[in-house]
Length: 525
Picture 1 (cartoon, rainbow, N blue to C red):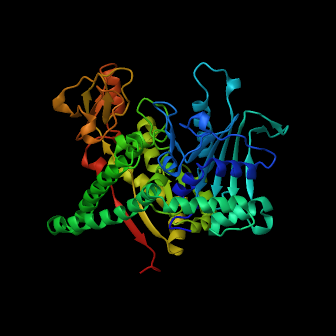
Picture 2 (cartoon, rainbow, N blue to C red; picture 1 turned 90 degrees about the horizontal axis):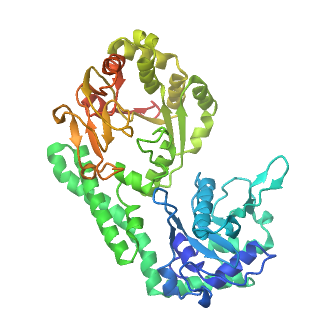
Picture 3 (tube, rainbow, N blue to C red; picture 1 turned 30 degrees about the vertical axis):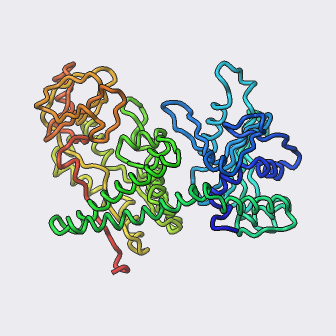
């Protein structure tokens, strides 16, 4: 066997684009089925979807655009038979979103396979198949099969979509004979000479490893990892030079950013040389707000949407780990009340399973909103000192303090921070906007904003500061100092209601500077 093994996402995609390999794979899963024809996307039907290794190498990724505002889906291997569409995915590392990813793939496949004007009866049967090098459900089952059905009546919906997950780590005693050789090949690379399918896969892997074009594709993946490490080191060197003047920590951060930019430019150049689309390249570079909106449209919430902006924190943390190629496990918990805090403490031992545990305490933000909306709370927290006192009292008597004690006793390292600060607003600034203008009191964005430029910090071209722009004419304005934005309609009522409330979203020091506190138990010292 060559340098690259079958259990590599790119190698898997290349080999499984072979019609014979696909045919044998499907017939292994569906022994009752004989596959007569395999047809790949962009391959002429008359050649049966057949492709040379070189042709396969440049077509290993199939991108389905599900809509301008939707998330593009890259499918590892997508092919169709006479009446069925299959997507086959290799999954090397555990992830929590495999079920929802499957759902999204089904949607993308269905949308792509049904031509405009065709009725739903033309929709082909669709299978999403994961080959997992782990057990996603911890049930030690060799194969998990999922379809839509009525739980009470055990009645199949019959929508034609199925998800199949192959657990290659299943106990050998429970693995069916038909899967045993394949699972062993995925896990170890060893070939059972009695199994024609595995022998064929091994031969194709050897051929791929000997092919120069394939080697270019495969090497790119490893080169990107190397470039990442080099960029960090280069960034540190640059940072050290500036660090003599501004401090080591700041210098390292500047250098890291410079190195990251250099890395991304180099990677983008190489990807373009290989003919990879601009859309795919942009998904690997940049993470300012405009890039988040582009890369993760399913996680980004626009200003005109009713959905809260803090609902996708957990998935966004996962994207960070993925971008930095970290294999760490993590848990995410949002505590909105004492009940959820008590529940987390009751499940405390489970936190030890994860490298990182993210806990969001929503009390302070909730107190800020309650102070605005509740006359009683406003009276209790009539000034900033009283506001801080209430917060301190809450912490001393909450389950959160018990959680901190438990963490300290268990030798955890705790990092305390926040996503933003707040400021007590006092001075109204008149702003006029259309019905689509957002409601935040400290910043506005829209197409037709009217204001006094001397009273705001304005950004007429959001792209220059890496902010998303829903429209070409979208502009941003931010409040500074203790100002807040008010509409001319019902101006006096609006001003009296929001004056002396705590708000955020502007560009004051109180909002933009956040604490970063590291706590270590005495056991660590």
